[in-house]
Image: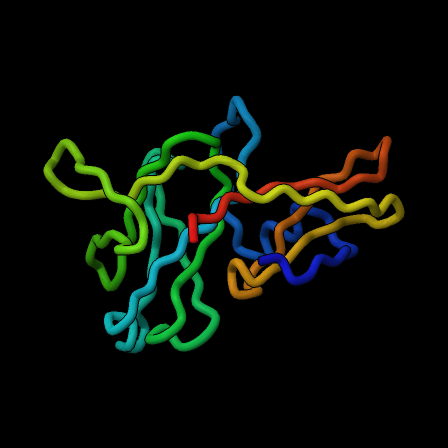
Length: 170
């Protein structure tokens, strides 16, 4: 559910950096979709200092994306938003040095005999806001526990701000 939308007076690049949204380096052939990843670390995260990372085909498994937890990790999942090209994506989480998959997401077998999480990324939420006189716009919502602002892009000729996001089913 979307419970609120608001306009802010910051450039989108500033919103990306201040909200820890990861961007891949390569130039995509189609628009990138902000994609929400969630891992519930449960009892593993009760040990102090344990963090979570996500690795995946979205950046050729080249670097981790650090996940964030807004609350007690024993009962609040880790979350990250990664800008991903639409299409199939495989990914896995690293928690306390161990590779793990989410029990909440689909899995596929790897050539090495292991498991990765899997999903097909496509825009599942589209946002359109008419606000011709602002310098930046973003939306926030309960889909990610109000943790991140999703920056929108403006069409200067119409004053329309638009954006999309991919949420896992559920």
